[in-house]
Image 1 (spheres, helix red, strand yellow):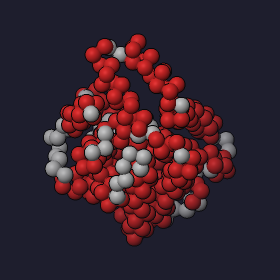
Image 2 (cartoon, rainbow, N blue to C red; image 1 turned 120 degrees about the horizontal axis):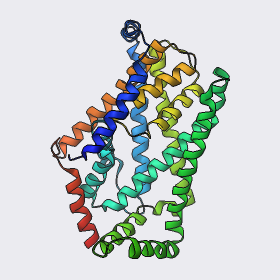
Image 3 (cartoon, rainbow, N blue to C red; image 1 turned 135 degrees about the horizontal axis):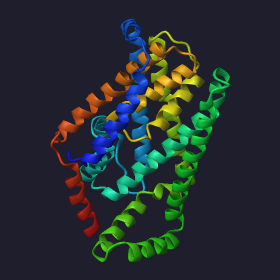
Image 4 (cartoon, helix red, strand yellow; image 1 turned 120 degrees about the vertical axis):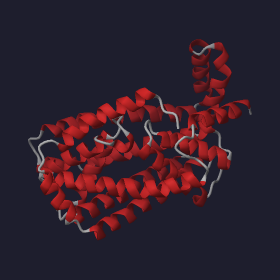
Amino acid sequence: MKIKRWHVWLGLIISAIFLWLAFRKVDFALVWEQLKTANLAYVALGIVAYFITLFVRTWRWKILLLPMKSVSLVKLFPILSAGYMANNIYPARAGDLLRTVLLRKKEDVPISASLATIIVEHLFDGIAILALVLLNLGQLTNFAPNSQWVGIIEKSAFWVGLIFGLILLVFIGMVLLPEKMAGFTNWVINHLIPTKLREPFGGIIEKFTVGLRVLRSPLQSLLVMFQSVLIWVIETGLYWGVMRAMGLQLTFQSLLMVVGIVNLVLLVPAAPGGLGTFDAATKSMMELFGVSPENALSFALLLRVALWLPVTLVGAFFFVKEGFGLSTDLQSIQEVYKDEDTNH
């Protein structure tokens, strides 16, 4: 799978900085002792909760794809799992690319249209995460009323929410005001895109708009929003399981806050699986809630394994089953399918 070299180096540099932040000033002997005494039965319960979220994510993707094609959950789950595996081991969110390729290969859904549904997923995830942060910010204020992080989190949530909101409004405009948006995109294509690329670019935009059709229905949009909130609430069950395994005591609301902030930090580009960014954010948030640095790092490391390993193994099974391998150039396959979609 070919990835641009600068993506790799940028991710590695950022990850190295965050790993240093996560591991500095910690007694590693105490961290190891905490990990050795963890009750793995609670971790197993948390992993069950995580796989439930994968099924809810599959259900949500099915809803987003309905305006184009009805694809069964049984067919979508392997594709989604393989995508999550790829995000965990390849740079630049290659799992999203893999999902578009697999869906095109197996269900003949155009690349640009399926990519639009994945972007909509991310937007609704972002809105749901921001809601969790803002609704549970009081939990952090109670634990650290004088912390400068409260103000930083509020400002960051505002700006990220504004960006997500504007993008969502543009997407809604593309499906509810097709003539006006078509006029705007035609102007952009005719004035900013080279002549030989105008026709294929227009085809990509047209199919991308098809992928946004679910936003025409208020009921379906509300269902997708409900699914997105449900996903993150259930995923907090994994955080709860790891917390109980480590013998820590945080409220579920506090863990919702941790989940929200950690996933906002994961927007920062880094090495695959949020290496460093995830660990530093998780450790820092647990410390803000009164957990010692050693216990906070132990929690982050065990949580990383629980989040990363099971879904990566399951996704790798489906990845190999589809005939792909580490040397597969998904970018080239995607371009071939895009050309076919544009010419249809």
